[in-house]
Image (cartoon, rainbow, N blue to C red):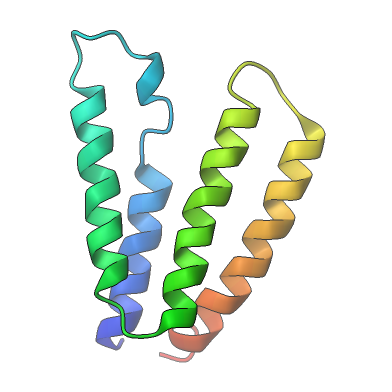
Amino acid sequence: MTATANKIETALQILNHHDWYWCMADYTTPAYGNAYGSMREFVELVASIEDNTIIKALRDLWTATYEYVRSTMFGYNDEAKAKFKAREAELLAIIKPTYVMAA
C-alpha cells in the first residue's frame, strides 16, 4: 500500500471511531478532550495528503457524517439516513478507487 493509501485508511478509521456524541457527556468524563484530539488528528492527517480531490472528499465526508449524526441525535430519521448513505457512497467512490483499491 502506498503512503497516501495508508493515510486514507487511517483517516477513515479515525472518522469511524470518532465520538460524535461527546456533547452528551457530563463534564466528569474526558469526552470533549478525546473528541477534540480525534478531530485534530483527522485534520492534520488529511492535510498531509497531497491530492486536493481526496482532501476535499475526506473533509466533506467528515461534514456529512456530522450532519447525519446531528439530524438523528434524538430520533431515527429515514430521510437523513438515505441522504447520508447516498453522500457517503458518492464520496467514498472518489476517495477509495483512486488509492486504496488500486494499491
